[in-house]
Length: 435
Image (cartoon, rainbow, N blue to C red; front, side, top):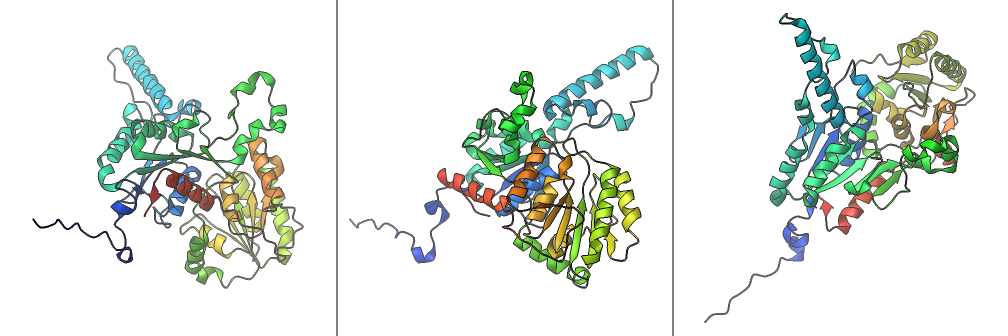
């Protein structure tokens, strides 16, 4: 009888097949991003996906990219009574709104006694009924994770924002072994529902002695989070985003013809809008205009952009005071958006204090960042600004700066650091990402 000759093991010089190297189901090749319709939140998820190599860094909002990345949005009904329901979890919001609409429709039917009544105006209806919950369907995503597991391995799910918590945690509960779930922004309770929670340090401001002094004793138990970060939590300084060296290098090339000829130094001014933690109005706009007028003498060029949250009364003052100055260009909101070109070509930035995202992106460049209005911020947003000042990353904008004098700091690199942490946790579980 001839001896049975077993096949030789794979040669190291030829590379080891993935099934021997890592096991059949140990490689993550694709991701689902669950968004809530807010650019600031979705940009954080996409930034992490990009840093992990699972999405093209030029795509901002992806509905479907085969075999790479999916984005599904969680949306709320809007208008009318919905403005009073926005504080609820999105699933409960939609259920209550559906019930209210059914009661409303039934009452109109009774009152009409058979008469035809005009429908409720569309702007007050939003998305009627429970069917709209399926826009980001946890069962559909779970089925996809199960059905494709044997071929494609585990599924990475990245969600950001309060509205995505219920759907994201449902996916993890229904397909625990086939999904790795990262929740960006603190979910406030039961962190064990997630594999990782990514949140800024200032989300834990409520636990500091300064915050405890500001909270009446009888409501302290209602303020979250209640406990210090555990092993599920990855802390950041600011917001995640898609800005890195490669993105800035690409933007510098794309915008070269427009920005290279501009007189230096180039000061870029990014203006957001007031929030509940950073309230301001026309008085800040007037002060900002005066400060910018003061520093124009040592600027070669100034470029100003407004966000979609900037109130008209604020932008109108800036335009009135500065638009006629030959050194100043104010973006009119028409495409193409020069935001990436500004980040790449600016010598310094002035950013209003309301936006953690815009400040985080500016601070990722290592260039001087001056913040306008941080003294108006309260609670955890004030703590965010304090931490940046202590790190030497930002300075307050006073109107007395010499923009030609540069200063630097180690750029904020939260997204890359979180991506490394995701890789580490995956490795502990015998998993890795392969784009």
